[in-house]
Amino acid sequence: MKLKFTKMHGAGNDFVVIDAINQQLDLGPEQWRRLADRRFGVGADQILIVERPVTEGSDFRYRIYNNDGGEVEQCGNGSRAFVRFVSDKGLTDKRSIRVETMSGIITPRLEDDGSITVDMGAPILEPGRVPFDAAGLEGVAEGRDTLWPITVSNQGQEHTVLVSTVSMGNPHAVQVVADVDAAPVLETGPQIEHHPRFPRRVNAGFLQIVDRGHVKLRVYERGAGETLACGTGACAAVVAGIRRGLLDSPVQVQARGGKLTINWAGEGQPVYMSGPAETVFEGEIEI
Figure 1 (tube, one colour):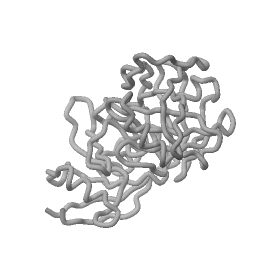
Figure 2 (cartoon, rainbow, N blue to C red; figure 1 turned 90 degrees about the vertical axis):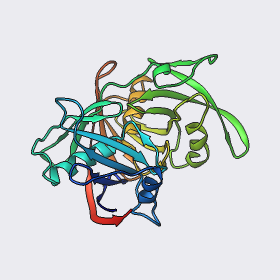
Figure 3 (tube, one colour; figure 1 turned 30 degrees about the vertical axis):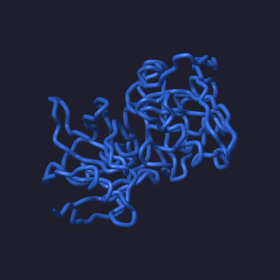
Figure 4 (cartoon, rainbow, N blue to C red; figure 1 turned 90 degrees about the horizontal axis):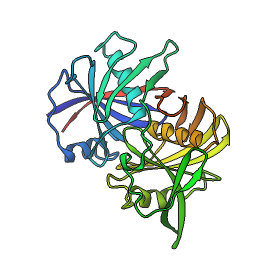
């Protein structure tokens, strides 16, 4: 079948976006992997599917597939691309929309300056709901947070890192590092992603504090590897930093592909993420 698509990115986190409202779509993991392949397909970190809503009161349904072909709950940068896509394609004339995801409703908004703000909902902080298995571990208190010890191997040597566990609809393990550029993201990121304490795997965040309103961040994403930016990872990192007493909202997050702004008022409150979303090109592929 021939499939029309749009290639987009948000701060370098790149996507294949597919309108499944105006074209029929019936693909499996092998086809998702091919679309995301940078040599044999279009190339993307994630594939975003625009569908009609299932529940009353929603405007759209949003589905996300990582480049390994697996479906995941949430993608923050993708949600901004989603808004840009449905607006540019004339699928809605609303500036603020309600979007169903696997992890619940999000409400992204197109701002007057062209940026997009997404209400990502309140973070989930209880370890068992992230989910993270803390049984038998002794946590380390820091501010209002509890840090959990995870054993990883770096250059053949085992050592323990302390991580904050946060869910933004998908699970994150955030550690603070002195220099994000020198952090062993590609070596220890996969170990954290597949650590048995995380039954659904996890996104591994490496956070450098620049000052109380600025951070640098790299994220090794579950099912996608390191990406140039991770929206939910930025939200989780800022939540962890504020809870640890290291940051004050709002926080500018410098990812390798661009900047995001994260606002969080504290426990029980939603996290707001603002940043760009751009169309790169459109095309059609036989799949």
